[in-house]
Image (spheres, rainbow, N blue to C red):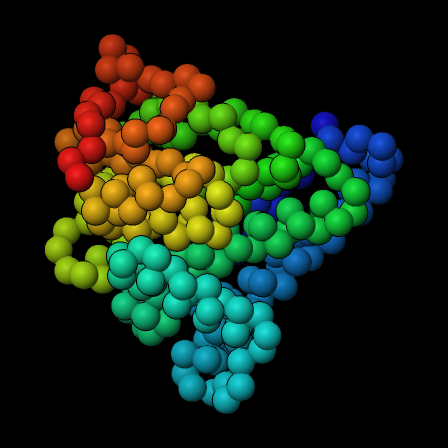
Length: 258
């Protein structure tokens, strides 16, 4: 296996690839190309860089969006609709901010570069948002929100997993529909990483109503942990290994209130 850790987009994106029939050098070049794509996305969509296209768009300095900006705008509208407004990039301070989906979307674009280059087994981990190539399977640990050295569970991932919450980045979430943030941590498993990223944010914000939306999506499961430590999960959510409340990493489990 070849590993790489690339600082980009305000986080670290990790790669784990099996070269298979490719040479290690060829696999490394593909990772270089994937990293270049991530940096290009960062330059284009960073809210911290005054001359990024997103920053200029927010200021009204861009009359016609690029094709990538148009794609992100379309994804943002779709995300707002499918989460019933619990994910809304237009509701954040400072104006339109799609970074809640751009990280997962960028990781998918990086993974696609690896696939086009001939890799069949690969994982891209963008700060905890993970996507893997079809046919790959990895066990991914989900950090417990109360203990950075503990896990609340380990999940078998064959497509994507995304986690959102206030425990890692502080109070950065906004409930577009008003009210408190429902969860300290929320995780969504399955489907596209872009969608999982969106729904993890929405689940952290909205809690049970968003869990109900996940129940209706084929091949997608999820769970969230409330401030009192209770874990609510979709009916099909399974863990390769789940922590129990007998140890420090435990979270009380309960059926979802739908």
